[in-house]
Length: 263
Image: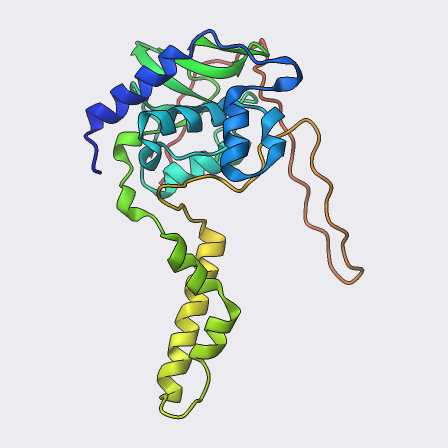
């Protein structure tokens, strides 16, 4: 069901404000991680960094997952907004604010995410999970560490990919069937169809896709210890390792600046 921009913002903020004061349990266990782990059927998220999983939980409770997304890895979440032309450098209530504690302005360097509650001059008042080590609480930030903002009201839910479309596009037997020269099939048309199917599959793999109604990232959240990598065959070159960043803000700040917009 189509939602108005006002109800998206108000309903999301209503849910997150009710959770203020929540504190994680020993072992980094939270109800948000437990919910996310159950939803994606992956138990490792029960004890993972939970700033973004809290937002996924809140969006689900508010009924606005189509507009907010549901992720555990903050760079993937920011890219999701960018791909939907809902990424900006201007804060507003209800926006998701993405931080890089090193002060960078690239989505790949994002460490943390919160929700903007209100804007007061050059200060943004936020609600953030997994801050000050164990808390879900209000914070007041300047923009020196902000990479950008994801704006739920700007997301168009109809720009998503349904699961059935992805399955059909990526099945190897479907590709071979379209390129076969069986009796009654035009070889030229069949070959063109096969090329189109492969192109769609490649674009989905490299461009990323979001499944409406179940918009959960399959990427791993940044964790204290990366999962073991699969063995690499001798003739293959190993992939570069992904940097592991902390989700806890350092004490120092840098001079305020505006992050550059993403085209």
